[in-house]
Image 1 (cartoon, rainbow, N blue to C red):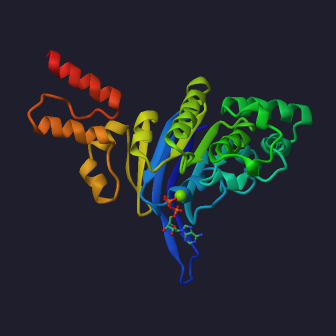
Image 2 (image 1 turned 120 degrees about the vertical axis):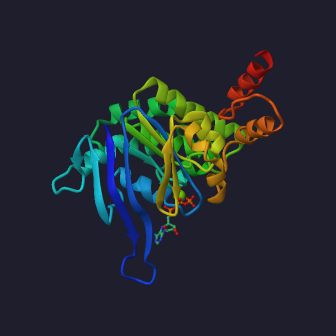
Length: 282
Ligand SMILES: Nc1ncnc2c1ncn2[C@@H]1O[C@H](COP(=O)(O)OP(=O)(O)OP(=O)(O)O)[C@@H](O)[C@H]1O
Ligand SMILES: [Mg+2]
């Protein structure tokens, strides 16, 4: 499914004292199978933007197309769209509400009208995909650890077999190990299916490691939209809006400033190491 946004504006509480324009003239296109990161300081409009992707929020003006069809046209099948575009909210634990994990993960497929048997099959498959331990399937979702709650919430969306997976800060508040495990699993999913993944994150390190493309949001506007290297080349401008490039970007620039003959565009520790080794051998 290709997603296309044309001049999307979104205003909260228009005409009141609380009026707030959260999205300003956003145009972008995402093709099926892309892994896109969305980054921006707090309040820049990331969550507002991604809730447009499955039609949960409707733009104040502008158009949104899936496979060329305008979702705001009357008669558009929103229910179908919501089952194809899975959205994991910023605090996914708030999405959990059933008596046990397996029923919770079954909720989506059940809503799609599938049989109990098929729902459970899909739920188990999704829980396995996210590395959720089987011994907790019958546990109440409220008794789980933070990391397991995230996994259960992501599984609940995956059980619907979406074509597009949108994750809003899926690792916020998790320890580094839990964070890496979840992101590695998402990467695995992306590599092994043709699923589009859209990942909202505060962490440049995470974004640099996983995504093919970064969209930088700033005060409701799209500031950059490019491959990670090209975006991080603007690290001075990113700093001005409260963001930073990955740590290695700074290290590479410092090495170069000290006279080492290195390219400065490495975005991961592995790439930086390779580049430093190369400069020794040249
Ligand atoms: N329900 C609401 N009513 C009014 N304004 C809102 C509402 N929700 C968000 N906003 C405002 O819209 C802007 C964008 O908010 P949004 O939640 O999309 O930002 P964000 O980039 O997701 O932030 P964070 O990184 O903190 O999650 C902010 O200025 C926010 O205060
Ligand atoms: Mg947010």
